[in-house]
Length: 150
Image 1: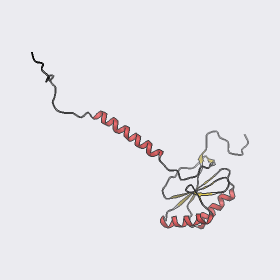
Image 2: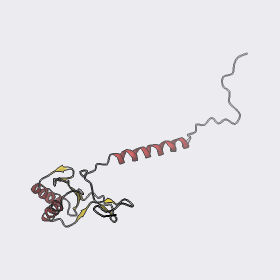
Image 3: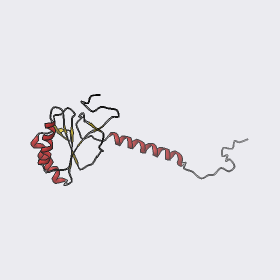
Image 4: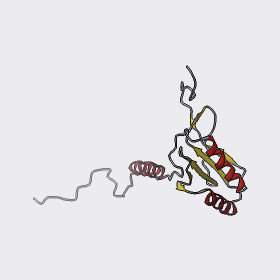
């Protein structure tokens, strides 16, 4: 007796179906992967400095902002690149010509001298930029201000 190879079950449909649930799972996985990779690729434009803490303040990450860092030795960095006083003014003037809404964020190390920060502020203002902000780190709960007696 010959074997019958073509056996159709009753109610079996010959049409092809696409299962959409596994496709949705794969798309969510890919979306999450791309989001995590893009977040890890964010290029920080500032030099690592120990920022002072403050209880108030808000983050402002904008593309029309130049980032100037001052480390504890008084060295100046524009977007992570070391720069001198005259070069800083020239670079800010050029950036302001390219973007009239240019703002400056100054990151000063906690141990930087006050005079160094004011010197940088003076250089920024001499370039004609009046919109200046100082970067801070959020204050940790229960932390005493530096120099405060308990």
